[in-house]
Amino acid sequence: MQPEAPGLTHRKYDGGGCALVRAPRTAGTPMLQTFNAAPQAANTTVLFFGAVGDQLGRSHRLHLPPGGVSASELRRLLSAQLPQAEAALTAPGVRMAVDKVLTAGDVHVQAGAEVAFFSAFSGG
Image (cartoon, rainbow, N blue to C red; front, side, top):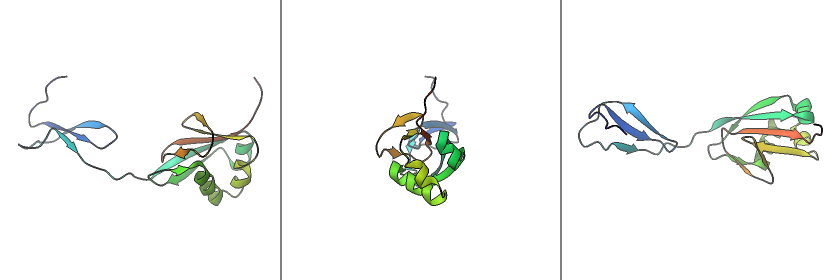
């Protein structure tokens, strides 16, 4: 790691990573400045495949609260926005994946995650 040029950069940490910021640094300013940014709500992409996609379309954008929601709450939110969602998402054999990982049970879904619902299928 190379030494930082005095007075030119300082680091800011926002909970999600550290970034060098080009800004004057005054005497006494610590090199690592921390601040607590409030979590923000994010759009979550929900994808639908197979029979679920035939009923609900291929995708839907859903605004989730900053702390995320449970899978059952996600289904409830989708049902409030898409008329056929309740029947399609609770049909036997419908599976859910979060960020491309198959899930089971009432898992927690973070705001901004990619969620997919798909019906069981066979083939090769």
